[in-house]
Length: 261
Image 1: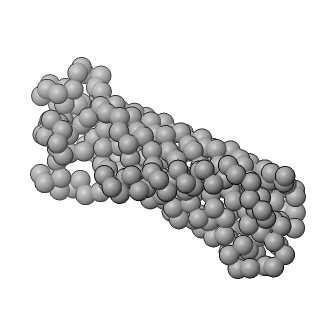
Image 2 (image 1 turned 180 degrees about the vertical axis):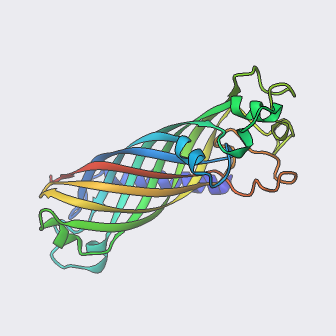
Image 3 (image 1 turned 60 degrees about the vertical axis):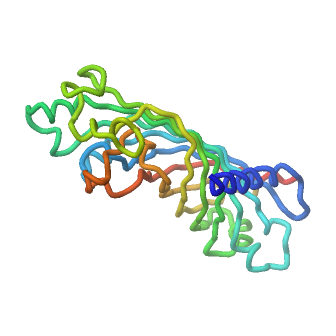
């Protein structure tokens, strides 16, 4: 609980700071949208069809603190780092794919009929490191600025799990592993809404359109501190193949505009 409160304070601080004008700092604002590939307890692990079909969409509003725009001293930090804050929303529809849904057994039919959704609202704070001097990028139209990023997010998810065979929770509609109590829940599935934290690692590049705007290609891996974000979490003590918490990958494109006040 203390960790969650501390993270919440850090992120709140990260969003409050950009709201105030600061000498020598330029704000950049933009929109980034793309596809989310959710790695969850749905479907066969490392199955290409499963991964490609369990994809959703995400859109985010971002704000960057740019320390180099007015800086002519070329300090290393100002020339290579930006602080990024964002708020984003994603939604992913989930189903089971892979070898376990093949055939006409009751278990295969139960898995095939199972479906879920997860919606996630997140606030994020990341530090971006640019491999090349930011000043050189800002002054060269048509140039690229590759970067890596590391940070965290706090958010709120809403997960649902249903079946076209009927209400989940009985042996007729529900695959056996999801009937076993798990992690304080009566079953290995849950329809719930809860707060969540995650760590995020990203790679990307900017493309300089003109002096005051960029295009960005952004990719991110995000690992959650819970295995319930997708609404499924079979008992780990019994089903030892359930090793990891939920995580996702994101790839998107965006437009960034410099606020030169």
